[in-house]
Image (cartoon, rainbow, N blue to C red):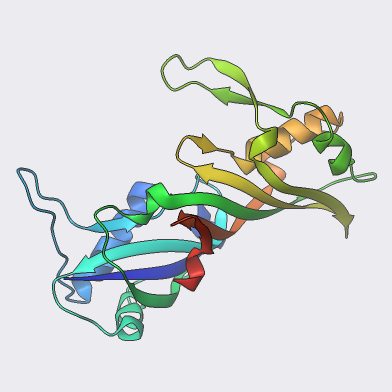
Length: 227
């Protein structure tokens, strides 16, 4: 059996495609390309395909990843080109490689993600360094079980957070924890920053793009694009 990792981008109106719809889109592309997917073994077999840590609805990305296990070997570039023939504008695979087969997929290994964001803004940019210099950086988070909003200190989970004013927009660059038990949503962080600065926050005006994903493996952090 063979495992492949394909990088794809999702831009424009495709940012409103849900995770389930994206999975269905890729599954149809696989069928049209005549690729036979491998299945897990056991009482309830399932297809070995995976979208690595799916994005929130409305986010764009230049670095998303799709894992697929196939019964027969494929040339990675040819596999990518076959799948691209069935994809709409705004979604394309742009890199493919054969990777080591593991018992689990890559989602559980993701450690950090990089994001850029922009929004229209009047006035001077708030001070991101002063925001990070606080003893605590508090975000609101909704608990899954109760639905209540609770405060959460995420200062230790922020590796980089910058904000600059350019061409009438605030431009953000962020490197945030993405491990399964410590995910920082960049949109919630921007909301917390703007509220701290007393600046207006309009969700619909913020465009967020994930630019890179990193995994921790054998004590080393790697960019998924390098696998």
